[in-house]
Image (cartoon, rainbow, N blue to C red; front, side, top):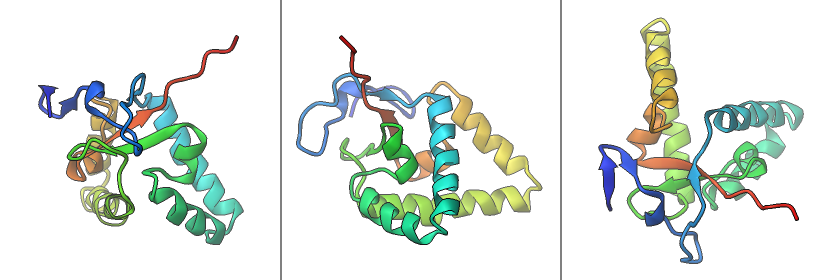
Length: 145
């Protein structure tokens, strides 16, 4: 895996599930990451968590969540350079994100500031992205003719 700097992986290294190069994919914009998170919360509330959980189970197999899927975002595994598996997505959400929440609570919010700072950095990766060896990429926008 070629890296430009620690933690930064060039996009040409990534491949889609079918093996095709992820040409045109780029690190997810900060506003898209945040919007996907808000959308996931809204969908969770609207479906009372039940519909969202079933949707998540299906989407995790493709390296995404309902909110990410609707906004064209996919979590890629930096080891395999392919969309994250359901196991990697579960580990990312159920272990690493929970640890980040606990760190935020224990440090009275200082842990969350660190996490937000990491997501706002040049890499656009959260702490749990780093821990789970994942990167969030957005698919190329289609040109309208």
